[in-house]
Amino acid sequence: MTVHFVGAGPGAADLLTLRAASMLAAADVVLYPGTYLDEAVLSHCRPDARLVDTQRLDLDAITAELVGAARAGLDVVRLTSGDPSLYSALAEQTRRLDEAGVAWDVTPGVPAYAAAAALAGRELTVPLVAQSVVLTRTQARSTAMPDSESLAAFAATRATLVLHLAITRIRALAEELVGDYGADCPVVVVHRASQPEELVLHGTLADIADAVEAAGLRQAAVILVGRALARDGGESWLYTADRERPGDR
Image (cartoon, rainbow, N blue to C red; front, side, top):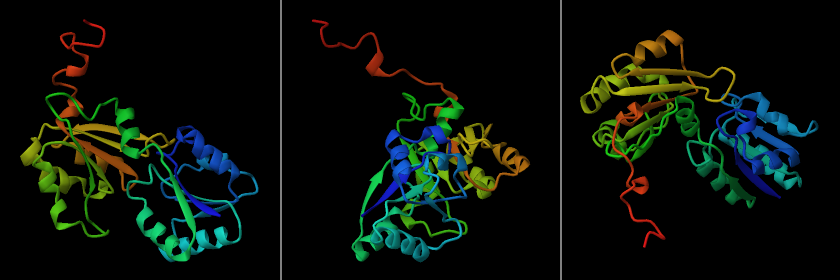
């Protein structure tokens, strides 16, 4: 049998892909990240499916569940929050499945940063302002960051920054970014995007830490930083009236 890694999206039950919903409906066993997932997502599962919350399991225990279910001939889905390509431990888990001789595949999901930008009503790339997006995180009680991926190095580009797993360090991060982005640079913090507890905070590098601390946010939040969030800038050449289009001649 094949272990299916499936992106559950940002949390809302109706933001899964059709493929993801179909896989959940067919699964005998579903492992899910209870810390980040709205339980309504599990409404797509069969009533008799075995549901395993992985928030208190280490990698060995998770792997044992996946391998055991697959070897028993059961259809197993490993749900990840957002999209499996970002901070999902996909690499670690699939390496272990390869070693165990268990087949696997991946189904993408709506990433949390996309849901956050949608709730804020913002495009992350605005002509003449920012044409690049940096998806990163910071180190606190977590895996060390590579030396080449310091926040200062990314900030020097002045691209739009998307910070995951960083909400508890919001004050220190804002202070670090002021030099490159300016104290008045827009910041949007989105907590539990698309879930019942969702909260969107708008501010600047000068005041966003006060807002986050006042709201008591400690996890499950995405931080967006950059001048593109102001929506000021140029206009895309793709849509300009001066650009020659097929059939113009």
